[in-house]
Length: 541
Ligand code: NAP
Image 1 (cartoon, rainbow, N blue to C red):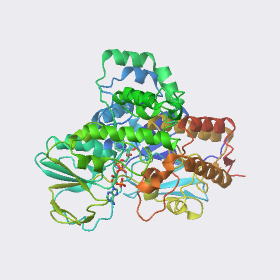
Image 2 (cartoon, helix red, strand yellow):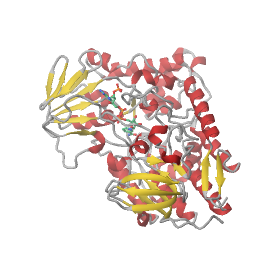
Image 3 (cartoon, protein in one colour):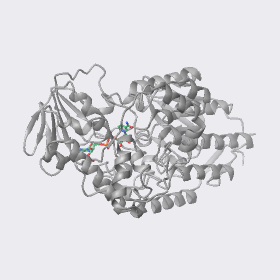
Image 4 (spheres, rainbow, N blue to C red):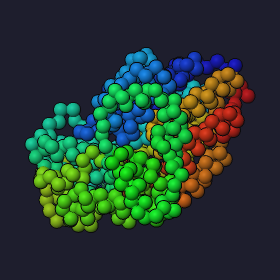
C-alpha cells in the first residue's frame, strides 16, 4: 500500500464544467475522495460563463453530453439540435442532481495557487480567500477555451457605457434599442449578431479576419428523432470514439475530392450544405483538411454561398475569407449570420485594411477613418485556448517551477495529460491533446487519469513522475503531424488553435492533429502498458 498520507482530499480538481462533473463520478467510483473548486457561482464551465445572446453548442446535442450513465442518456430530453446555454446549463444541473455530485463541489472559490510540496509529495492548494487544502492528485479541469483575451486597445477603460468580454455578459444588460459595437468576428459574434440585431438599434461589427461560416441548421427535437437516437446510443457513442474529431459523423466516407469529377463535387457539396454542422467538412470528402486543392474547392464553394446570402457586393468581398485554408481557423456555424448583414441596422467595419481601430473613446470607437458612437461595446475577442487557464492560476511543480514559465516557448505535455516536472498533476484536455467534440475527449481523458491514479493506489505508489523523454517525444510527434496539416497555416490569421491570437507570444503547436480516435487509442495503449510515459515511485523508496 501507499505510505499513509494525511491530505484533505485524494483529488482536488479546479473547474466544475463537464470535466469536473465527469471526474467526480469516476473518482468516487474508484473509492477516493475529491473536491472540485470553481470560482463561478454555478457549475457549467463554458455554459455558465458564455451567456451572450445566441450562445449555443456547435456540436449536436445527443453526443455533446456526458455518457458515463446509460440511464441518464435515456432519461434526458433535448429540445433542439443545438441547445442554447440555458439548456446546456440545465442539463449539467440535471447530471449533478441525478448523480449527487453537489457534495463534492465548492463554488464561488477562486484558486490562488497550487504548489507541489517536494518534502511531502502532496499538492497544496490555496484559495483566494486564504483557505488551504492538500491533496495527493491535482487535476486541471479548467476547460480548453476558458481564459478570455481582451486586446490592448488604447482607451479601453475610458468608455462610459458597458464594455465587457463576451464571456462576462452582464446579467441585467438590456440592449434593446441600443447602439452596439462588437470587436471581433469569430464564432461568438457569428452566434451573437443575428440575435442582437433583432432588437438593438444597430450593431456594428469590427472585423479583422473573415471566417468560413457553415450552416448549423437548427432543428426541433421531434419524438421520432429522439426515439431513433435513444435506440441507437451505443452506435452513436462508438462513432464518436472512432471519429477524428470525436463527432458522431459518418466518416471517413471513402471518397477524396481530388479523385472526383468537378460536377460530382458540386453535387455532393450542394447535397450536404443544407444538412448543417461540421458534417459539410467531414461527410463530403476525406481530403478537405489534407489536400490544399481539395480544401480550396470547399473554400470556393463556401465563398459562393456567401455571395448568394449577402446582397451588398462590397460586404460579400469583406466577408469572404482569403489567403488561408478552411479550418486554419476554427470555422463557426451559422444561425443567420450572413443574412444579418442584409439588415439596415447591421454594419461591418474592416479594421484590417481599411480602417484599423485607433482607440476606444468615452463615447465609442475611433478608427483611422471614422468615429463610431455606441451605448455598449462587446469584446468578442476570444480566449487563450489550451494554456490560458492553467497559466493564469499559478501552478508550481518541482523546484517551484511555474507552469507558465515552462510553457513560455513550447506548451509541451504528454498527450495533453501529464507535464514533466509536475508530479501527480493531471490535465483534462491540456495542450497537445486533440481538438474534438469535448465531452468525448473529456471522458476519455478522465478514464485514463483514473486508471493511472487507481494503479498508484493499488500498487502502493505515491509519486507519478512524468518523464521528460516521453514529453519530448510527444512534443516532436505532435509538431511533426501538425506541420503536415493545413491547420498549420493558422499562424497567418491569428488562429487560437496555434495560440497565434496571443499578442507578444510565439505561435505554437497546441493541438494533436493525428486524429482524436488515434489519440484515444494511444491513451488506452499507454494504460494497458502500465503508463510507460511516467515513472511511479513510492515516497519511502
Ligand atoms: P475567436 O474565434 O478567436 O474570435 C475572436 C475575434 O476577435 C476574431 O475575429 C479576432 O480577429 C478578433 N480579435 C482578436 N484580437 C483582436 C484585436 N486585437 N483587434 C481586433 N480584433 C481582434 O473567439 P470566439 O468567437 O470567442 O471563439 C473562440 C472559440 O470558442 C471558437 O473557435 C470555438 O471553438 C469556441 N466557441 C464555440 C462556440 C460553440 O460551440 N457554439 C461558440 C463560441 C465560441 P482575427 O480573426 O483577425 O484574429
